[in-house]
Length: 225
Image 1 (cartoon, rainbow, N blue to C red):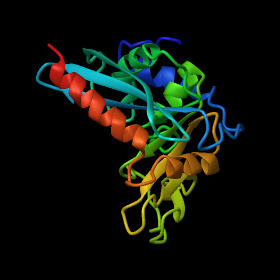
Image 2 (image 1 turned 60 degrees about the vertical axis):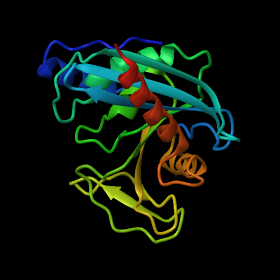
Image 3 (image 1 turned 120 degrees about the vertical axis):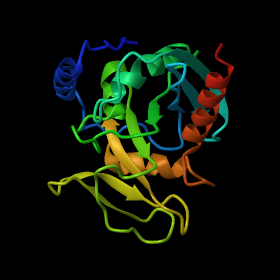
Image 4 (image 1 turned 120 degrees about the horizontal axis):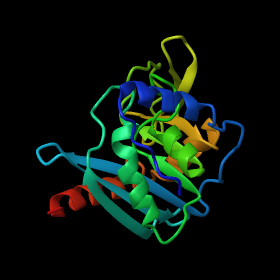
């Protein structure tokens, strides 16, 4: 996989984003739901020790059984700047993905793709850098708005940017539970990304990919010496 360059400052980070955004592919449908291997990635921070832990967990999309998992722990290499969070997380996430013994057909990020203030969230950044189809499933709508979708599983409504453009979808993954917020990262359509989000969430609001990766990165952070 391609490594992620750590920018020297905020201006360089924005310039890198602007360059990489040009390479986002939006005209591919992506892999079919319920087939192949799907990875989830997530990170956890220990601010006191200036550490970040990343986990990559690969599931069999048909059974949702864990096929492979890997973690990486490193020092935070970029300060927190709204809209530039990927630069804090990506180096360690890529290290975890590189450590996997298999290559997933799709990566699901706990966060955003196009539904991002600069139109280039972690899922976009990760997808462009690795070349893998990628998508974001976030727990909150960030700076975007939506009308409440219907109460049943699979009900959805557009996630709207301040200018009214559709940036993703508020998707109900379980009856009567708060929706998640799905957006395209790279090489997948929004319809297909939502289908994957549903297929990966048979019992809970959050996709199994994220649930496994969240648990694993927290454990890796606790165990880091």
